[in-house]
Image (tube, rainbow, N blue to C red; front, side, top):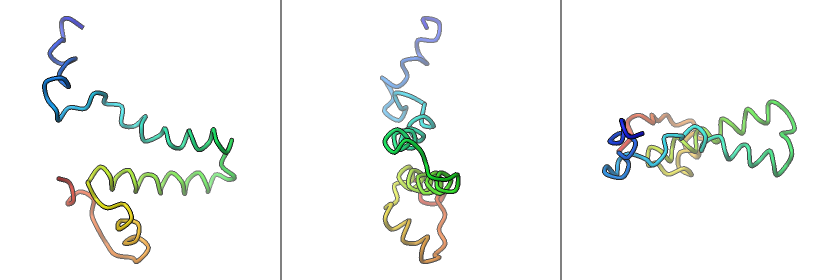
Length: 87
């Protein structure tokens, strides 16, 4: 760690750098908690639908989009692009 101290502690000096880079684990955690509470998904399709919905919610949040409006637009068939919404 001493040889890479500037990289290891970059988060302390640059507010744009997250404390952890483990976003994938944080995104997966909700599904794991849901499985622990209900002990399982009733079907593979149910697990797939849950993963898709949570993916949309997570992506909308990362792009500072209103989650409710994003889901509403999906159901209304309106097109949108996450990449143009980023701040």
